[in-house]
Length: 459
Image (cartoon, rainbow, N blue to C red; front, side):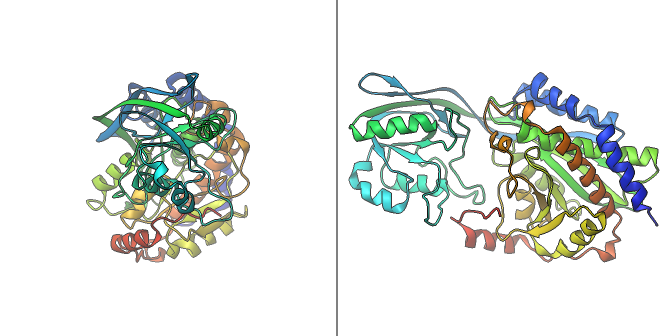
């Protein structure tokens, strides 16, 4: 089938810009619905909105796929310094269990092995104050492993100092999601603001103690993935997947993280569906559009999707994950496995906009592409702010300040247009020209074991 790519490109980019629904979707998701913690009534409202939009935009199908979610909620979090009863900013770590402790404050700096050793027996039963940042000029250690070393030294709890200023705090996890078997919360952990971290370090030097209380519950609930599809005109039994999570952390409207990615999924689906209706150019192989629940809860939505669909189905030729897009312009595609690099780069080169394809040297567990990687399925994410050219608004995620104004409408339009162009091209690559995927889940597991405890390189 001959395709006039010049004409198709012109139409796709034009529709992405002039037909855009981005503002309406941002208002609906971030302002009308608001925080979308998976298992909440707001998440259910969001997935029904997304499904309704996919149907209205003419996709061949749009369905909700429920899954059982192991979830968590907190109802109380307090910290007070003895002697003057000074209140301290805290936010529980994601999935922090209930606990209550009053103990001496010990400053452990960055929580490196050297600093923990220097504290000696003074850490036993103490509340450790640790910086989330990496110690300058040393081999970086993920904070999850530093927390484990504090637990092994006998600390009763950890207060982790946020890197952001202005008394801003965000949710963090106590585990390394590349290693699901790694035990989390060997000691309770909470975040404090940078400013109150400095206060706690001063109080530690004065021999003061801190009272910490968190009340939380763990329970099972239902969450949902939204699955839409445009059926391919030539090889409908094959597909490419593009997805992004619709959920947020507690209390965050989730503008950048991740209304940006959710809206890009929806808008790319709309543009490609309209291409079939208005210029009679349909994808050659099917394209599936998925918004995942529970990304902020250890990728439970994308994990459920992978378990449900693969291997009962042939896996996607490629799964592209969209997360935190609206904080820097699109630069290209980043693969986990190298065998598709030349194919994708050749099509990016034909598009003529200087987009590049790269391969990460480590397996990245930052978002919903990771469950696909663990299954040995080709997956990628976009080369964007996380690597170079970072906007200031990229700093807003996992917090109440991640509002709809953090979305860069112009750049999201560009993402949608470029994604539509590359997806349409890849959908028309004949099966015999698509490189074989040699990666097995066993090989991935060996890589993960070799990379355990390292910090993922992002540039």
